[in-house]
Image 1 (cartoon, rainbow, N blue to C red):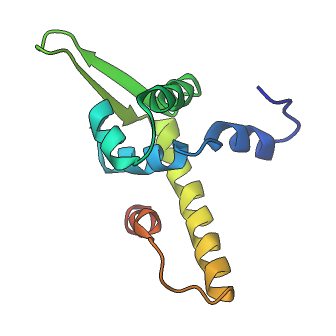
Image 2 (cartoon, one colour; image 1 turned 135 degrees about the vertical axis):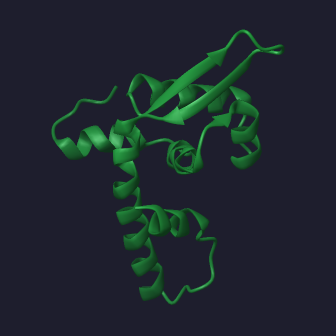
Length: 121
């Protein structure tokens, strides 16, 4: 882990990683299985996705539920209350990014993540 100097550093360390904000966004819709997240995060390897999930779990943003009584065993991930608290931060990041893109003259882009944050926070 990087040396932490401020609260900003802490948050940056927690959500840094190519897939973490997308994972958090998707879990904002509800519980997801690993296979669901693999489909959503196009291009991510199973190994990298599992690493990102483990990091988010270790940081307390998501929880992993194992349903061992089912065949095959089912594993689902969901946001914790702490993880839900990050949705407003991610919404602010989306809004700021939108403003930056507008200033650059870019008006057409994939904005599904920001649309979710605007509707649910």
